[in-house]
Image 1 (tube, helix red, strand yellow):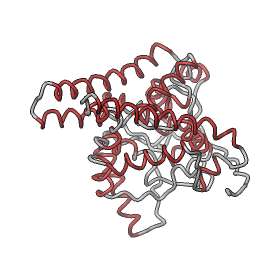
Image 2 (cartoon, helix red, strand yellow):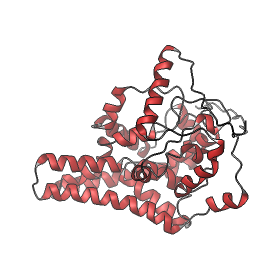
Image 3 (tube, rainbow, N blue to C red):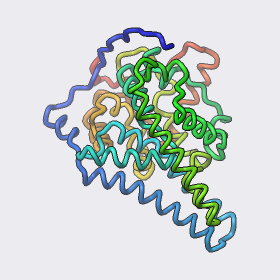
Length: 339
């Protein structure tokens, strides 16, 4: 049984923004949402189609393998699409958020109800354990983690399959799951259990039908995408908090923004503006760049590019090996307000 406790109330610092700018940045647009969501699904469909056609027309194996890997690289960012749509901030029309949330989640074995229950706490208590168990510092990453998770990762797929199967039979385990879905509240568990059964039925059915018709490439391009190609997602997603401070009421010190190439930022659903996202979570992802511009005077200068960012992160991780209690304190500009 999970322990019952009352979480602390955290008085988060938030950068002041003029009222007119604040209102404009919070405006949602179905058109811009379709550009992001439809554009992403379009890229996903194109890479899948290219890989399928290469396989179908018996192109050289290395070309087909390269195209399959490229597709997996795109598919990995479905996680960020699920995250954004789960916030309910992408589309102005609520039902469209829910429809595309389920479509993306279905494709990649994701469980948005499980994720949202945890993620709401992550935003409310960012890096304040034990009330945030989604990210707990220090995070120790090594080259081995990148190689295992970023290229060929059958263990990652197997974990997702077993997790889905466990939920489908109604088993919730681990302290954090029991906090988010207490045993004495069975109604909370009904939706994630039903969704797990839908996900399992979809992928098992798709795989069976595809193999029966000799189209084994189709489940490779849909059901098994979590098993390969996630190197770029790994490098992007792990920049968000690693090496920063925990137990501080200031998103500027516990979240990291990094400036990325527009194409990478698009695939990442603009989550490279992660500090801005935490500070004002109701701002749609396509407005985060403008939010960053409005907050620039008050926040640490962001690293430009993944190479610059990871050089810094690696230096912090190396120092933490020698000094386990060390945490990097982001340097605020002179114009910044003190929290």
